[in-house]
Image (cartoon, rainbow, N blue to C red; front, side, top):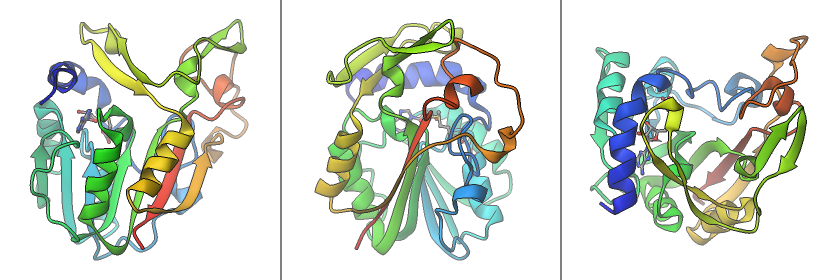
Amino acid sequence: MNEILIGNKKSWNTVSHHFNGVDALPSYGPFAQTEDELHLFNEIKDKNVLEIGYGSGHSLRYMAEQGASELWGVDLSEEQRSAAESTLNGLNANLFCAPMEDDIGLPKGHFDIVYSIYAIGWTTDLPGTFQLIHSYLKKGGCFIFSWDHPLYPHLLMENGRIYLDSSYQEEGPYTIERFKGENAPMVLHKRKLSTYINELIKAGFTIEQVIESDVGERFEGVDGEVSDRYYSLYKARQFPTTMIIKAVKM
Ligand SMILES: C[S@@+](CC[C@H](N)C(=O)[O-])C[C@H]1O[C@@H](n2cnc3c(N)ncnc32)[C@H](O)[C@@H]1O
């Protein structure tokens, strides 16, 4: 494991308790439309599904409720695995604790659906991760993932006005020293929207849909008071929090 992954794993073990069911299907991300509104997954019943970054396991439970046949997942953190095990209590799931970047011998050409809710952006190797995901899918299978809109980490709010705080042109790693207010430094990568799209194409995917989220129906009529928080309803009404991409292995 590279240095970044060793550090991130330790920090994810520290902060995992903050993420119990936070970013999980049918939700795609903060304030964004849900799967009930977007209908990106076709048939889930009797399909083999693999989640990248399964976190607390709530999305896998959602997949089970929709009648998925086999539940598989990979996540970096042991703490997340124990959280997922208790969420999936009694359900048969193959949960692996490993970096998504590594080929840990997951079956190739086996999955109808690979998906990831707010985890893909953690990869330290985007091309390698997309190539692996492509290899796990059956022909005709789909890959759906959501992540922060790529411009989002460059934006700051001050007194209700959004401004660009750093160059969108600069891609690469950056460190958050205190994640979720804990002594849990995390290294993330800034990447452009075109980088995600081009790496999917290079890995062999056909892109079916790209969504820059709008505010979900559940917030209709809800007052979004002016806020300078990283995620807020007020900000989400002006700029997409979340990018969602659906790609297919033809
Ligand atoms: C925001 S959480 C995703 C939450 C998840 N969708 C849920 O329902 O709980 C991000 C997850 O990605 C995992 N993660 C971070 N870096 C990873 C990596 N390189 N490989 C695999 N999983 C990773 C973390 O351990 C964490 O569980």
